[in-house]
Length: 393
Ligand code: ADP
Image (cartoon, rainbow, N blue to C red; front, side):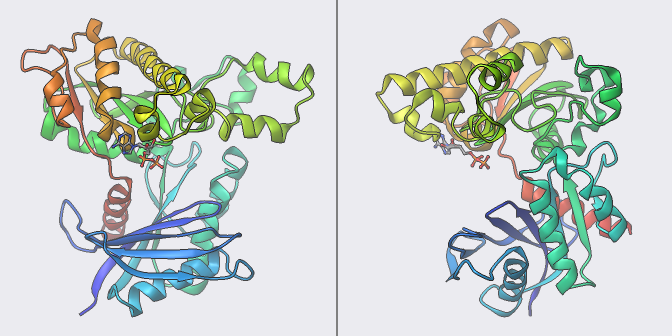
């Protein structure tokens, strides 16, 4: 018999990633399979895997006539009628921006979709594609319940002062404020942290993946994020700059004749670990490299994390625990060691052997502040939200 499943969708400009979770009451939903369609617009290709990561199916199409709508239809059909033997009963979507309206997931009705379209200018690289996948599913499967889960929602608890830019206040009213992102990852970590550090009330989480941000969490609620109006703020990332002196952008535009497209490419594509190292955006490559550029990029990366940690610890009035997560945070022991050594002043006593072994605890038993590796799982967080919201409805 086909397994009832929640389909979790993360739709970008050129790719749609999915994961299917068994639909039941388990506090920890079981994954049934995952995969992606990449190369939309150029060379669309599909890989679908089972829960063990074994490839169950592959496909390719010509770019013409195969967009987000065709991709979503293919995915559901493949899941239900091919190898995977799944019956999709609901879809949960990662949606980058919920604006000020959405502090929790929401069922995606026509009225909600109209609201979400208004946030497209706030996240032009992601929001339109997130919504395109939802529309495509709604058109083909009008009875399928769909839920939107927002990267911004977890940060709606940030106090007003943390949401302000020092710009004329009327502009804040127009939505120009600090929102914060990676919220689904932080929410997942906040849910799991009590298993590791039940007494930790003031916590900093470092989400170190291709996208990089840090979050200050007080009693399970976000109070500050390194990301602001867009997901380019804060720390250096794989190819994104992180925070820049805004005067630098004016200099490029006014004195060097740069246009918006060139500035966007600098901010999002040419910078971060890749730009500084001139070697790679992949931390594995940088850590294995002997190039001076790779060393420089790694040093800047760790320095920036330590600097932000100081700021977030100040916001919290000290910390009880520090958590590393996402690709680099979960796997790159040398990065964690460098950051933890720089954080000794906070009362962090590194257990170097435990760190090399991957934790979960990275600090000695007598360390006043504990540090941890906790793997994130944004897809599972979306599956939990989707199930719970539909059960409540
Ligand atoms: P995304 O933000 O796309 O979800 P991930 O969380 O998968 O990204 O993180 C990708 C980053 O994790 C890359 O920089 C990659 O090099 C790094 N990474 C993954 N595995 C390791 C490893 N074993 N050692 C060091 N870095 C790693």
